[in-house]
Amino acid sequence: MSVALFTHPVALTHDTGAHHPECADRLRYVLRALEAPEFAPLLREQAPEATRAQLTAVHDQAYVEAIFALPQDRMIAIDGDTIFSPGTLETVLRGAGGAAAAVDAVMEGWAKAAFVAMRPPGHHAESDRAMGFCFFNNAAVAARHARDKWGLKRVAVADFDVHHGNGTQEIFYRDPAVMYASSHQSPCFPGTGSKSETGVGNIFNVPLPPGTDGPAFRAAWREGILPDLRAFAPELLIISAGFDAHVADPLAQLRLREPDYTWLTQELLAVADECCPGRVVSLLEGGYNLDALAQSCAAHVRALLRL
Image (tube, rainbow, N blue to C red; front, side):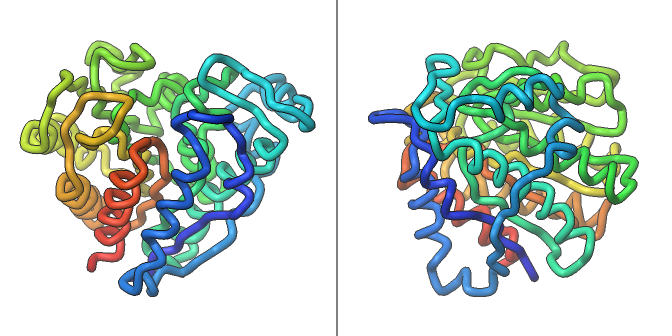
């Protein structure tokens, strides 16, 4: 099973300051875990920078220009959570560009699946707003790139981060060609993602109460999301792969463990096998306990490799 890994060392230069949960060590721990011998088959690629056209396909042009115009000689707090530093612009450009390149890899067929290991996450970034650590919405960039370059008519985004991907939902809320499906803790940041938020029939939210464990999480996907994914029959499946629903994560209160991520990844691969010859692009989102993030991410990539 050929799986491409897109990353770039510049992502370590995005500086959020001392004691910020979205830190460079997140990526260091993930990449260290993926250096184990079992991951030798990964096709290791450098994430390229996104073009402005790729960004403005999902973000307002004025917003994109405002991000490019931010001073790159000091740290700036966009809000209490979201920090721009001298290394941020290239990092977020390569996060979005890596997502688009991952789509190309699976559509060209030299990789069956792809995993983009970059930071910061992207799924909270709305069309005109940075928030929740996020600047550009990598999943949205990937989905629109799949449609614009490859002419796909149906693209699905499956999001298992513990926080609702409000940005991805907002960008595609009235776009029937993109299905967005999310499980997430509620109540929790950012406060969106109720079952009543359905878009044009393309949005599927499954809020989970604090304390939800692995069996309940699996049941929620088995009964509440996977059948809808199959019914949508995507031509490409994009995964917003956040690992902050882990029991050890400090930012939320779900109780997942590594086998739960293995199970869901295998279930999503089964959907992709049925609907779109196994084409999967997975993007790293959250996960803030370093050891749990590394181990969960390794379980996810191991499943992508079908080991």
